[in-house]
Amino acid sequence: MKVLICGECFSSNLGDGVISEALQQLAAKFPEVESVDVLDLSGRRGFGAEAAGAGDRSGDGLLRAAHRVLFARSYWYAAGINWLATQWAMRTGRRKAHLRTRVAAYDHLVIGGGQLLRDNRLHFPTRIGALVAIAEDVNTPVSFFSVGVGKRWSALGRRYFASALSSDSVTSIFCRDQMSADRLISMLPRLTGKIRVTVDAALSLRGAERDPSERPHRIGLCIMESRPIRWTDNKHPLASPRANERFWQELCAGLISRGVAVSLFTTGPSSDQYVAEKVWQNCRQQMRFPGQLELLPRPLRPKGLREYVRSFRAMVTFRLHANILGFVAGVPSIALAWDEKVKEFMEYSGQNERYMDVADSIDVIIQGVERSLKSNIDPDIRATLAARVEEDFGALLGVAES
Image (cartoon, rainbow, N blue to C red):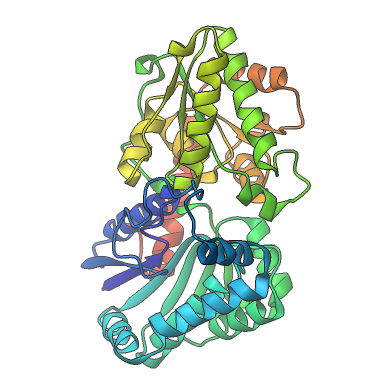
């Protein structure tokens, strides 16, 4: 069996790359799978496509600045741009013929994981719709694995998803948590027979654990810019750039005042790294002990992100896959509330006590960090979740686990 894995494989947000690596490793576990390859849903050909400093837009020209503002503020402007991009990349001439040839060479197309079933201004709906149509044309079975489902779809986004997921070529849809499965059933109830529940594919990663006693007494703060928070909940306390930066600065100051060394890092997006640099510069100017704070370079590959996470004794992060990498590596993390997908993961991984609201005071969050420094990840829960991912992926392929 030849398997083609499609997702945001080469996204600058390396959490997506981590998922892709996990899916490749999962497929390789089964002797029935003779080869595995990847296809980036957005058409990237490798990592590093996003230029360094992309978060700094001070040099934008007038037209580029106007496009950026319209793309951020107008759903239909952005949706139109995304629709045109999909038409150009996946539904015309040689590009479509190339995709047809590539998909036809495989016995199974696996689309996953991440929050792929969301209407991000029609980008995912149009891309997934075009890809499933190609797979249907060349008689390649399609499965979705460990996918998250957004809570709001436009009428047009719903139409694209309904058409794609209802295709006879789509054999199964494994959602990464119960919340996503419930959302998908409520939006497209006729798909109930195809929908199953699994957990996040990245939980299957092995060989990443490091003994806590070998780690330095250093806390990793995974910085995320405010836009994803604002798009999810515009009333969130950190929905504005200024509030977000102030939160991280106060958390740095509070930890360092207690004698804890701090590393600032990101999961890869340049816009996140830009904010991390601003926080680092402001903190160094204000702190008595700037030597206890370091800014780690922007990671460019999933391996670099995993190495960062393994080097910490504990973490504080918004990002779901920073939390998951910490869980896999045995590094406790404080998961900050902003998106229900994070809450779902913390619940089913037995870490409710580490899920915290930024509305709490900085002192309360620091107390949570201090508790995490004295605690460990439950290895039994971790092993159970890893085994579940492998079992479900085998079921998706129609083979037994080796």
